[in-house]
Length: 443
Image (cartoon, rainbow, N blue to C red; front, side, top):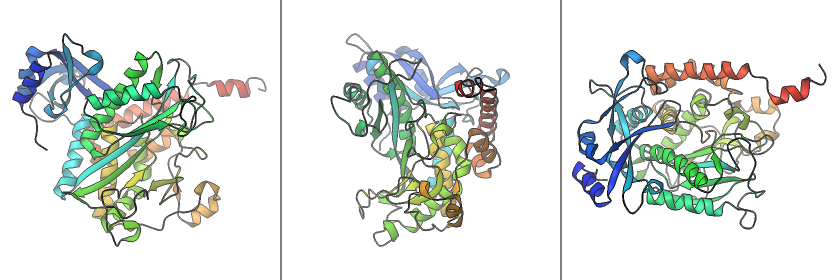
């Protein structure tokens, strides 16, 4: 795909009456950050980037080394629909962060993903992903009061959020994001909009935009949207199942017409690598205390480390929608949630899969029975391990992972681990309503 030139961007800005450009980037925890420049600064920003103070951005820099350069990626230029009108428009571009010396900043999550994609490229592969992000609509941000009592694939009159989803999809399409389909999810007021698969860097940018669009559209309709993994006890949480595959040119490297399950040796080794490193990467793909309230048995979220074809209780599924079709062959990693940092989540999944290919790991037999119905003894006999039970366990496993250190880089790795330990320390000191209700009357 041809890259956009500076001249093309300047022409679009002129033709669309762009007055402001928002330069977007992401902090270590996956929160969207940015600042605005006027169109008069656009040419200079495209040539040299824009300086900013990174000392207050999570994981970016200490005060004594705070100067950063944001270099906008021309291919991400898009008009922001909800900030634009007839008189003038507002655009956005995602940025790569650099040090003043011209060196890429190692704490930039986008750089971490690009560095890992470069490793795949050296082996001749491109990495495609297609995430399914679930989320909830609530009446406001203070209490999880649902808008409906709908269920999976329900339509009117239960699904009062169809207009919300429609407006969200139209906005994303105007930003150049391809949507595959949308529907009501299992839990009341829970929804899903699935993005058409594309290369991982574009998709990570798209996920950040998606979350912004969902929230902004909800705000415009007077409600609140949240990607919190488990906002309500007793019902399904929100996941981000990630469909993924490696391509060599136009050929799907995971596909083998004669292979078992139509998976190539590369596809099976990649899957085996994900299974091997699943415990290590969980701190990245499920990075919040609340993430582990979702990863419990009984709510369709995966807990046990195994793979299957049709079995949705497995961590990895090989979808069978179109068996034997090359482009449709992929694996689905089911534990990530939509509140993760997509740049880091895609990077660690790729690193785990490539490690499996490098070491030619063998993929065991699929778990075709419902793993939730097995006893612990039965799971142990099959060698089925579990994901970390909470954030603390996930942190401790990740902290000792050479794969995670290498994938994230030393600077970002140290900050991430330190930040997550602080989150756990804060959480463990809390007295919850559950404890008050359970213990106060009897102790």
